[in-house]
Length: 274
Image (cartoon, rainbow, N blue to C red; front, side, top):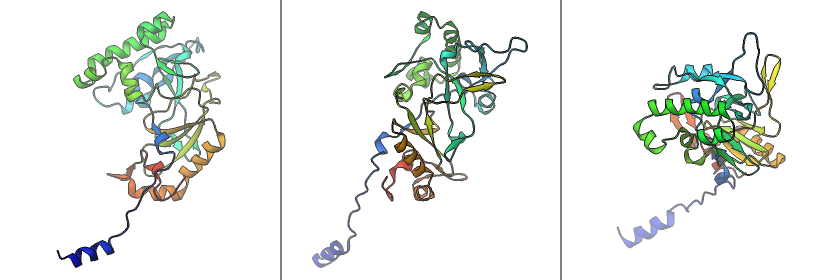
């Protein structure tokens, strides 16, 4: 190529485009991998004559978790009483609608919350603290994990609580933050909702109510933590807007039925600055 042509090409080369990430980009995280769901997602089970013990309710693997389970977790059901200290709430991506949700889901998790940390407890630690029922539930889950998980999974995560905290996605959630701005990990359209963790709805069991110990973000959602209510609702409104929903479409990976995964693309916002 002649020197003249090289200079001509340089002259007509489009300028480099500097894409700026949203300042929220590095602070939005994926929720915890709470699977197999039949181990942790539960329904409350009423005794026909005794009703329900609000301190030690009888729970069983959630019906929809059993129905949607894949091999080798299909038809594996857990049932038993659990100390109410270990009943938490979560939302799946499919539960979220713009500025709201369809249903809050109860999950049983061996967690100990403090003002600064979210710590998983194994069987011995639970027994030492006197939580015999949660220890027994976790023992069953561990046995089923050891019998059915792949060799690779067992090598990397021999204890099921280590799988629950895969990549620290559970223990890194801050119990002190007041608001979670959630949005769906995948779907045709982006939807968002603000969870006020200090004002969670109780689970209604006929005339009885059980309040969740706290809220845990699950892996079918991404979340942003803040104590600023105005900021939380501003970001939620931004994520629910048609402008962002349309802007993120070209960035989504495709699926059989169209665009699917958002991940942090929803907050990437190369077309719009938050």
